[in-house]
Length: 352
Length: 167
Image 1 (cartoon, rainbow over the protein chains, first blue to last red):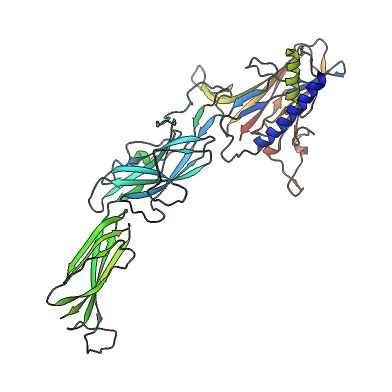
Image 2: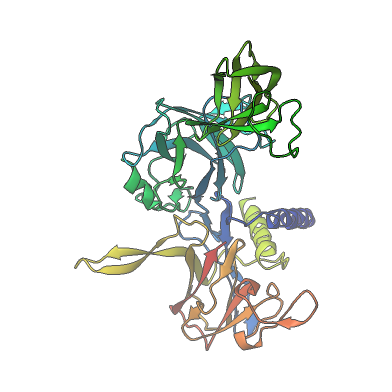
């Protein structure tokens, strides 16, 4: 019977050694994992009458068991971060403003977080009318086919990319909407946790929640809400959106001398028979792409005759442009111009 | 059967915490009651409304928090006990708070080799990856040992304590 016990002991000891090795491989980047039991036991050795006695193991007086290790469970520390980058990698064909949100769980356990935003209560012209969140499918580029989400699940130490597609509630050129993007600890069922267990009675045998997130005082200044320290919510710095504003400029240059006029080959003069080239530059000053842009320009007759097919729509900033020019009128339809891009169209006419 | 199970548990605990397989364990009657509690300090108000630091059971512990282990011993043997040594390993997932070990009427020594050898702080030695001796860091501490000065008479009791920070 005793021999059997000893064998079992050895097996158990090997098991403990192995489990110890496995535990030692855990990452401590953000601290010990929540729910981890931390055990400790003291030993006392002594002699009586000069004879060494068997050592005695300590007892945890808070439990009914005898000579058991003193244990506490590591509680859940909730901490996270969110940053917003206002430019998307690669173009998007979707109408609206795309922001890349980078969200990271810096707590010590897996956690769900709600995605949202706080509109500015002053200091801008309008609000966002709607926002759709898409979880990046791994390639870092928005295609519009990603899974639509309202909350994001993050493992300990995990960072994910989320695309936020915002639609502005307005149509006046250059009007601005400003927001703070937010990430808030959730109960996993669509609601914010709201509070942690800071005010509850300590219990070494349960895993309690402790908020450890920082504050963003700009939120209280800019919005009707706030982002206080240890409130389970973090926010990005402000992100501004601008209603697409188009600026059109038109310039002209004489680009070829009249037939029979040799001149110096460079400084062409605008005399009858010379060719002039018009350049129309359409700049999108907004923060979102614009679609279905059309331009129409009729050259004065009888002074000029439009040279067809001289209309040049090959500028890559004039995506989707369709040339429909006829007679003395230049017409280009269906142009999409990305945020901050300038689409340039040129055409020639001959002076009569 | 119950007694044998208990013996087995004791043996397992020994091999966990001291790496010593000792198949001959103490009898059921233990002349020393040894308890070990883990607590943390919180700010509270006394009856006059002043801030006071209070120790409470370590219930809400997250990485970076400090906890205090207090081991209390009480002797009930008829004959005096001598050669009294209390040893305690630094728990896994924690780092010893250097200088926090205390114990009245004891000599406190530390181990950086999982209890194989114990020395005073000044004589602790660790080597770096190249085998060169380097300065001791808090994470190097693996065990603490308190050697009681003198002997324990029936009814004598005392406490030793130390602090660790959860990784």
